[in-house]
Length: 112
Figure 1 (spheres, rainbow, N blue to C red):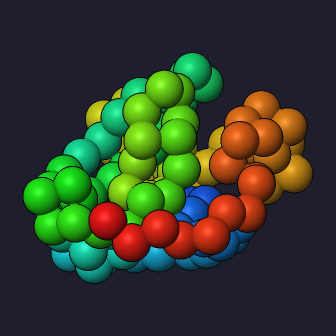
Figure 2: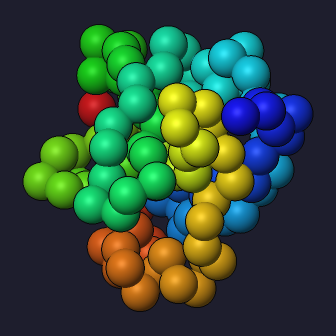
C-alpha cells in the first residue's frame, strides 16, 4: 500500500473543539503536532487511531479530555489507518461528533 504524503486528521487542542486539518504524513510533523514523541492508541472504531504525546504527563502538558476512561493531556489528533500506515480519517467531522460526543464539549484549560 502506498503511503499518502498528506493526510486528513481531526486535531483536538486543550480547551478547544476538534478541527479537521491536513498534515504531512511524516513522523516529524506528527511529533510537532503533539509537541513531542508520539504514542498511538487504538479507538473503538476499526481503522481510526488516536495520537498523543507519549510524555505529556511528564512534561506537565495541559489537560485536554477524558477519552475511553483515560485523561489525555496536550494536543491530540485522530487519524485513519491503512494497514500499518496512517491515512485520512474515514469519516466526516459531524459523523465523528456523533460517535465521540465527549470530544465536543468545550472545557476550560486546566494547567497542571
